[in-house]
Figure 1 (cartoon, rainbow, N blue to C red):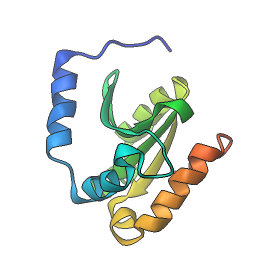
Figure 2: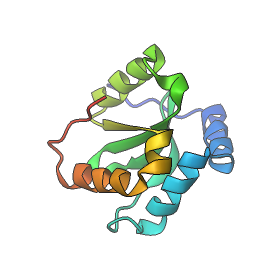
Figure 3: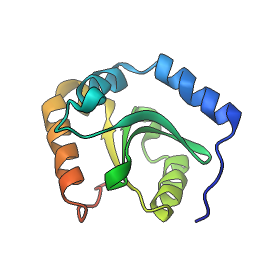
Figure 4: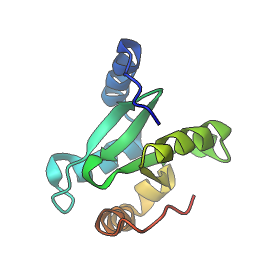
Length: 123
């Protein structure tokens, strides 16, 4: 899949999302920022073509998405994941409740996916 340039509008949208994270995104970012989680370098709200990924660890080509209930069975998310997978990324999704109630398990899962590139997301 060819690289799509990021439009100024998409870049501004990503900036606004960084300024106004959901509670779950903020809690997870607290664990991921500054290489706090296993010395892994994550970026947040990263523009990628037509989309903005919640958290990206480029070296492992891993995207972590935090979803609310509006994402259940979302066709938009399926199309998005298909495009990002075509670019070679794995998209790991967690529900907001997972992050808020089981943050340690979420972090352990992220570390496992970073360390084992053969692992494939379950949803």
